[in-house]
Each structure stands twice: as structure tokens, then as C-alpha cells.
Amino acid sequence: MTKFALKSVFSASAFAFALLSVSAPAFAADTYKLDDTHTSVTFQWTHFGFSHPSGKFMNAVGSVTLDEANPAKSSVEVSFAIDGINTGVAKLDEHLKGEQFFDAAKFPTATFKSTKVVPTSATTADVTGDLTIHGVTKPVTLKVKLNKKDVHPMMKKVDAGFTATGTINRSDFGIGAYVPAVSDQIDLSIEAEAIAQ
Image (cartoon, rainbow, N blue to C red; front, top):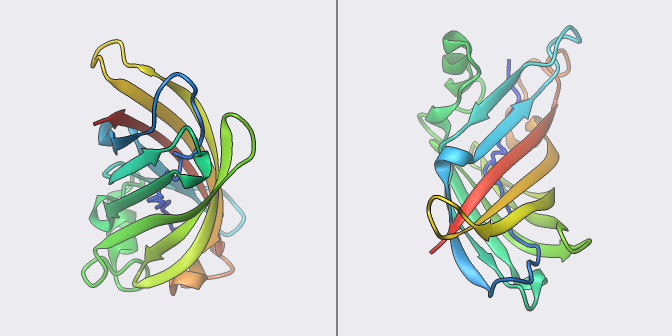
């Protein structure tokens, strides 16, 4: 049934995606643009305890600023259209876009904007930001890992790839239909690539 997402920051995101907070010694701080063809926000929920369905957004638009000298000053901003939701079941997609859940006609966009980046190792960070879904804004923290940062062999530009995870309660965003039979907790899994501009 529902399981938000985003994740979203997404997001992510963001998802985001705040994925961009880690250091990478070989390159200077720069601004990156999310590659929507290699960025996804997957959200998963529990359906009456029987299964764990999932949905995905692959229409993220956003930018990342990576500050290698001071990773804590890195940031990310991501938005995605709710209309792009894809669970693999067309009727469920329409249901989730309806008034009981995301109400995409009234709230067509989800956003994530980072507010704090706390490096936890050379390649990981906790990225906190404001996630807005269904017209409601709440703080969300993502666990982010820098997978790789290097010159892309085909595009010949610096590419940074991230994995991020987090959880939200959909009822916090006013999307509480069928809780608790359909879980309130939504698990977010974000994969992202961003290209230096």
C-alpha cells in the first residue's frame, strides 16, 4: 500500500543524497549535478506482515556541493516529482498518488535539503536535512557512504557515487492510511551518481 519514500531524500533525498558530504583527496571542492539515470530512491514497507513490497523514484533533480577541505560544509539539494512513483503495479501507483497517500495533485513534489553533515570516516557521513513530503517538512538523517569518486571513463568528467540509507514514519508526513496493518515505518535506500559541473 504505501510506504513513502522518498527517499525521497528522496529525495532524497534525497537522496539524498546528502550523499555528498564525504572527502575525496584527489579532487578539489566542486558542484555536482545528480545524474537522474543513475540515481534512485527506493522505499520499502511491510504489507500486513506478509511481505515487504517496494517502490522507486528515478526522477531526482538536484545538486551537491563537496567541500574536500571541510567535508562538514558539503551540502545537497534534491527534488523529485511524486508522479514518477513506480512500484511495478500500475493500479498501486495510482492509489499511492491519490488523496489517501501522497495526493500528488495537491503536493506534486518532494524535496530534501541538507542542514548538517557529520563525517564519520574518510568515506562515510551522517547527513541531516529537511525532507518535505505531502506538504509537511521534517528532519531526516541519512547514513551516507561515498562509493567512488573519479574521472568517469566515458564522460571524462569527475563522477561521485553514493549509497545512503534511512528510515521515516509516513504518518509524520500526514500519510497514515492503514497504519499499523501497512507499516508506518518506511525504509529508504538511495543510490546516486553526481557529475562535476
